[in-house]
Image (cartoon, rainbow, N blue to C red; front, side, top):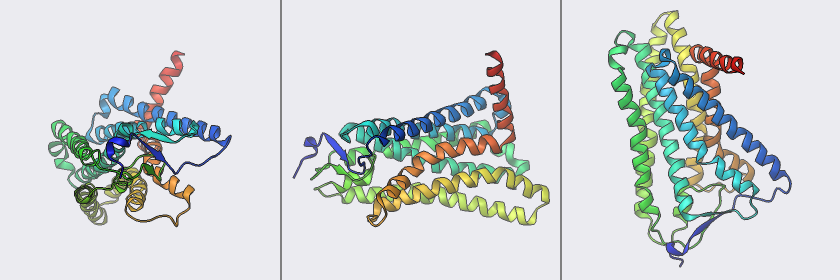
Length: 311
């Protein structure tokens, strides 16, 4: 039995020798990361600098884009180092830090999308009461609710996994995740499993219930309302639904992969799908909202044009 104090590093076993192709993979991942940083920072700056965009929907979007930066920064620099490395190991403290970043990112993302669905419900179903029910103070409270509980819950997960006694240090993934580390334990993990199930249930089903409730109400209003109401719902809900489905697909696979044996799935596909919820939303969301929402699109074009004119 190897005590946790003796496990100073973990070995990531999902990486395989790609020869000289590793430089192509490195440049591809680097370009993706630069695009994620540029696109999300651009939209955050545009929303913060323009008072006309200081509305609840855009402030929640700003929170979403900040989370995209947070989640991708918890993964991409690490991936870049591992791609070029011949020995795929990670120190135990950094592994635990990455677990915290990855899981808090996922919880914040889903909760942010749930609050955005509630905002769309108020705007479409209660337009006359929207300004009184979605004040700036309430928006600030909602953003605090989006960020604080996931951060605290995932922070208090660490004292449960760090002291575990482990019989090995091999993780069959390209990054550290909670369940892979817990599976290495020799000691009793009942408390970890119960805590993990409770956290997963609240992180998934809490926001999911809110999302289902709001969209059922929105659909009822759309079917019984005017053509103008349907057009408004379609224009504002389409990018949100696309973001929600995109993230949910990747998150569902990650939850299933952590709980069930996925050895029958090809390794390359497993790697791609395990990275999906950490890589695709940060790329997809700024493109979707930047192109679909006309107010953001116009402001982005103005900012880029003004910067280009100065040079």
